Image (cartoon, rainbow, N blue to C red; front, side, top):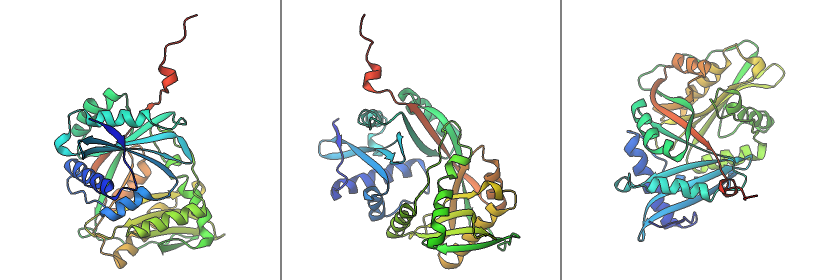
Length: 334
């Protein structure tokens, strides 16, 4: 089955890819609601600091699967690999072939490949790992638990004040005077939280990058709620971001939460999360909210339990070292 580049600017091809992604994900994630086709394709095409190399597998003129190799400009050594195969074509080796094709066409800067996937039970995770990822050379890097808050069944507590701090919630972007600090905090979210064997480094977000991200989310139909705690000196001490989708059947997503190290232990993480949840319920039709955290992140897991979040899925992140073609050739005889 031929594999070739999927033209990201081809509307027909991207529409076919969208339908495959939806069918493949909904098969293994019951109740999952996708972004609209226009919003999803807009994300693929966005100039958002990611190189996106798409490959398609074809049965004649029919697209039956596709894969993406993605590198962030600030972490060019890591290539993320994602694969989707139409359900009727699965378990025929197409996914494996697509992964290998992405690896074989990755940037020269790549030193490792990473991927992630969601399943509703550990049994499904173990079966997928044994059947698919391990034969490709991938090993478990870390696990995260996805939790969900059903706002129709949970009564949120009243937002709480924290002595020495002011809480603010903004819609579709924080004011300009806070953007540099928020960008610094966003760059610390993955690096400072437990992340297994991934070893994420700090990746600061500039005010221009921050503005572009907000612009894309709004163009996709999201409403962006960001809550910050500001100390008496005007410094941002804590931040969180919640994305509410245009389709109220799709769960809102908490994109990240972080309390700056010297301000921890005062309840600011719970306070900013509660502030954004409260504002979202007042101004949108959000019914469910999802978030995830590393299974070793006992602090954030405790906050989420206190707010009423319940486990619904497991996410695994896998990785393997990249071997360049030159590395795989035998040494010359001497």
